[in-house]
Length: 159
Length: 290
Image (tube, rainbow over all chains, first blue to last red; front, top):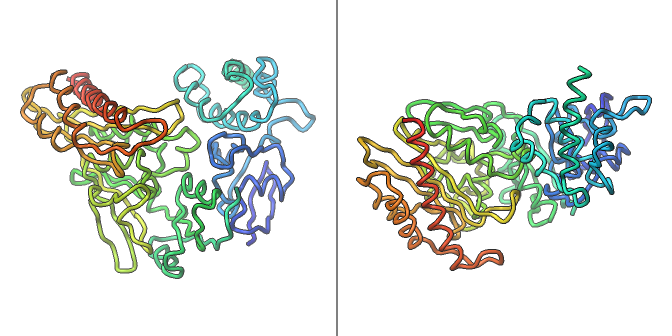
């Protein structure tokens, strides 16, 4: 079946089987391999992307459901000249990653959360709950938590 | 880890959905939030030949309060309950419970009705539905019908929803002003499935309990109501002793299945403790607003 959707600000056409997950469509059909696939059943969160402003598991949605909708992946974060997004810079500064496998999922999870409500970093419990959404086996999460807090401050300062 | 092939149909109304389901009797499934169904399809434990996507049916996104009942459409997401959807204590109960479901991205997509249809034996919404005696509205080829939650859940992952039928909405009774709500759950980690969960509501007049509801998940093949414990509480004051005794009575009404992370004896113990805690929370909820 044919669908048209917007990915990272560009209209894209896809001719896909209905069983194609959004994650596989992004990776295999559009070559956007920044979105990672870990568990493929919604637990690890490596495949998290932003669909119409909300963070979702792209392994638990079919691309067929995304006609006419807007998808943002990790490839959309850095500026055109390669300058990292403030959140990416904060992940580097605070040791928010080691192997990097989970990083795209965390970046999109947190980007959607900060866009929806930057004050989430003021509420330790809500921030902790947000970060339990995804799995990281390297950092112990503390670096990620610090990175989110730092990025929220940086993003406020820039805006 | 990739689903088996299927046909896909996005529909715009419940009637259209039912017509589509009828095209492939027994082989079609409704796709709402998909946070359990797509997982099962990825594992190929589910291999529907046709997926009927109801996400475009905007009338099913509504929540309405009328005549002492909160009506929740089949597309209302878990996340929609995080801020109380009603000024009635029911709004607080749904808000409290919603935070135990999956994690934020799952809650963004998953729906209350979908959780009922999936009927996971330790899922939160089925326990709430049974505790409150919710009405589950179904639409099928023979028209609409409603099934009470007590009759809806049959076994793990099995409900009274027939092939060809879909859930259109859930009717939850408001609890009334003098009511308090509680919810307690035991699980291994923050994001694990529950092992045992307890829902409690208490209604009080002049310091005496006039209505009590206790719903339990993970203590039998389906969610149950601890009716003997509820009856014991009627006419009693709000007291820690009464709640502990109600918890002990609730244990007698359970028939837990053994499971690697929680044996039968452990579950029976845990359910008594959790039922007591949910009741204490309900009492604190009442007193907090007194």
